Amino acid sequence: MAAYAVRLSPRANQDLATLSGEVALRIAKKMRILTLDPSPRGDTVKRLSGFTIPTYRLRIGDYRAVFRVEETRIDILRVVHRSQLDRALGDLT
Image 1: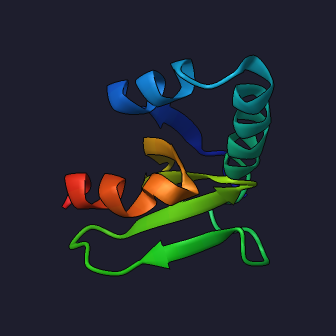
Image 2: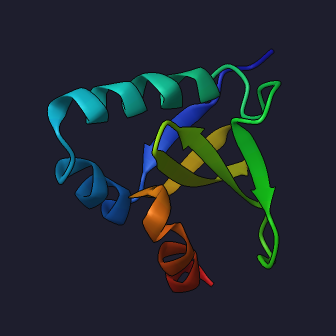
């Protein structure tokens, strides 16, 4: 299985910069798992409806990472608290 490269958007970098170091580290570890398999088993990854380009969310505790998979690259678009997910998704459409 090929490894995927993870790329953070400028907005995702801003999102991570606002989080505490412990939370950001936990999110980074979880995103590293995506490099091996962008759709791991279980309910941590879900495809989101309403997007023309397939878009997914990764559940990381109370936070969600919104991403897209393109060939061998994973683009992280946003990292937000679950209560802010709907607003963040509205900005992406």
